[in-house]
Length: 261
Image (cartoon, rainbow, N blue to C red):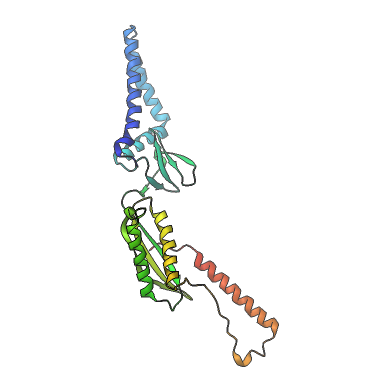
């Protein structure tokens, strides 16, 4: 991420270059004996006409000016605006160029930006869920997560990117067949994806060493003992299919994105 001066200097340089070029042309014409007063008057009238005919351009320039004065974003920062997001790669007089995480370059006029979310100012809070069977030792899971957090703080590759250590937040939810425990950490902007991936890997390995495994979703269909013989094979197969369908529907429901909390 560049500092503010490195973001503004290219734009100021372009603006001053245009002004100096115009002044040079005018001084040259004046030194050749050309009366530039009519040219200046004509330029004023033309400027008014262009202002009415190019309101979008004027709106882009003014919006960009205020965005830069407010220091809303800088080159190298990751921002999101409406349905567009990416890393600020270049800033011009009229447009901002965002590099999407999939690689494409997006060119957006300043007047189309609207409200901006800048992910590079302050820390990024990351919360993720881990699901276990009901009989899981919650205190052991908490200690494992805390231990992994301490290890990652000491790791030179990840430690400097933490703002707050990885810790367990306890039981998040008790579902139909699983116990959900939530973990949380705060990291520097742009590093949370890698830290979360590494945290998943280390927590899983540490839990396996303690003999703790994640929950496997399952459904049990019970048949009354006294009536098990009275149920024919066809009915039994229908009941098994109904149970499988219920399991699939519940799995789809659980996979739907949840509202952040």
